Amino acid sequence: MTNDKNHAEYIGYEYRAITVPREHTSLCLDSYPCFGWEPDPNRETDTDSSPRGTPRMQETVVLHFRRPRTISNKAELTRLQRNFDSCVAELKALERDKTMLATIVSLAAGILGTAFMAGATFAVVAEPPIIWLTILLAVPGFLGWIVPYFLYRILVRKRTAEVEPLIGQKYDEIHSICEKGSHLLH
Image 1: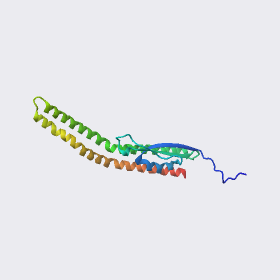
Image 2: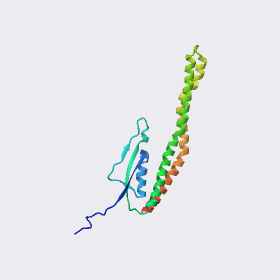
Image 3: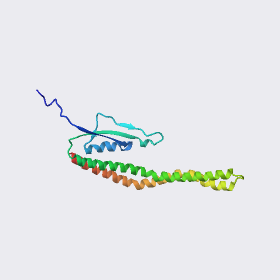
Image 4: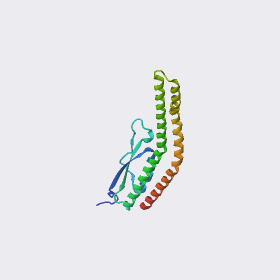
């Protein structure tokens, strides 16, 4: 006497854990169901804090998903998912690109300013002190310490204006990929 209503059918699952930056957590939680994945109810989201000294934005989150092994269109969904993952990686690269050049240029200006200050220091401690050379080297040295802050802000603002349309296009591509995956599931 077996009652079919009381016996649940066995469903085999495949599992996946992904590590994403905190700012992309919602994007992945919203998009992975389009490829047949659902959040694993048996696992909690793990937060992986960055090492000390790194910005808080770099914290990562480990998301756990599962999907039935017998899902239809699995090969095409997997292809779309890989495409989605590469788009997310490109988003991360574009976000990093906003500040990379500005950081390099600002550091170079600061190091150059430090070199001028070192020259000014050597000129003042020389026997006899060369005051005119100290002043001549100290002025660009101080400028090399002050200008990098403003240079960084200007370059980040300029690069952000260039990169934002590319980021928007990447989000549109992600939306298109998720729509295709969702249509394959339904």
